[in-house]
Image (cartoon, rainbow, N blue to C red; front, side, top):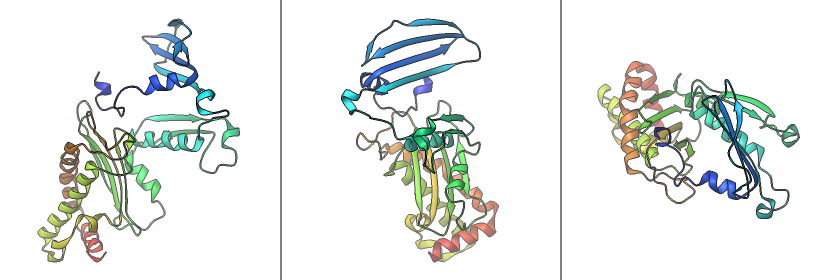
Length: 281
């Protein structure tokens, strides 16, 4: 269905693999006010599909599983901090969605960066993410350049937040909510759009010093968050750390260029400050 057009999985084997590698897996589905359950052991059903009765005010799927110690070793366990950060990042990527986190307190005792109970809710999406990441840093402009484009079916949707600040730049990018740590074509689109937009603004105001600005100049002190959703993404390698889909560059560049032009034109004082900052750096 359309809900899966821009999913993160490549082959649709995720839950099947988890099932096969679990000593026990239980799946519950609430649909049409009815609750169903089925249980598995090492990937093999140990019960049929059970109708547990009628339920109200509940929809969706819950999956509970325990990794098989014969495969992963005795005492194998998940890292609470990694799961905590992953859940929080999903809330940023789906701005407005509420994710409730709950963990056994004994597993996070003594950890400063993980709570036993938390609610993740960020209406501002990636803009909130960016501001939380560089909250204590000096910023060149008062407001970050942030926005998003929505597309029917999800394909081509882009969200971004960029701020220039007094430290080394970075880009945290995602494709279909998968973190692309090594960048890729979508990041190339972001860099090109920002560089061309700033050079175009410089031409308009007659600043000739900006003619030699490169994408590296623009990004060297830029803190950026970006998320793109595309159908059937192509990655470099199975770890999905780098996006290779050629179309993604055009999608991102087209989505960001006009809004960036308008953002610069709307506040000439801030735009001039940014331009001088990039030239001086």
